[in-house]
Length: 264
Image (tube, rainbow, N blue to C red; front, side, top):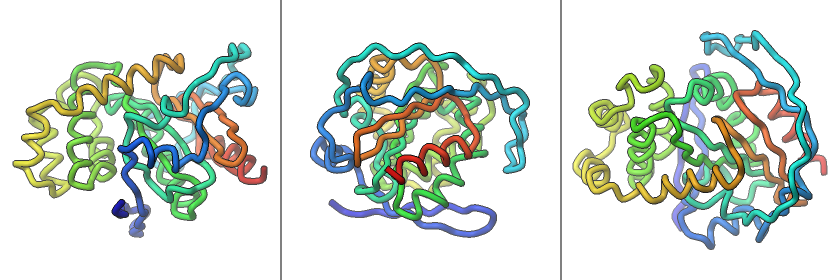
């Protein structure tokens, strides 16, 4: 399997992350080194804060409202590991990282965009670049048709090794919900910005080859009981622990969970 690289910029500095495609079942299982997870047995009982952010996406943005949500203990059930990692993006980061962060998101989602601007880059810099965490993005296209259009275009970009570059370009151009910014005309413009071969990209979008993959990813989200985006699963390869994070939580929430898992 050929290693690829993803380059991004944080505060004027360029960073490069190696990534591997997780399209095959074999490579997916090797990434996490576990055959299945008993969700009821291993999800930690944590209070999840619901945070409402302002429109300012700078690093200094602070939550305006924070409240604790009481969590009912989950009903024990067996969930195959494929529900977390199949039908998703190429793995971003080291395939054998001790922690995998799975995000279920929608490219039109406001709070997914907040997470991208306020938190994701810090995770990439401090945990993915250092080989501690790898990342998988899975589609949960719940807002509208343009969500599906954007998701499909991103998988088409992935055929040319630029899934994550296109993923970032979408969030860098986010303009709201169901107002056309992620429609067919603009996804072609974004492809040109990323430097894709347009004939190959257009052919991929026109034949709808990733429609089933997106639909299956949506089904995976429903199996997990996800009702909104973004939704995160933090999976430890060492002890099969899984923790959930709901919404665009501050970086410190992810940092605390990552560090606790790395200590165990």
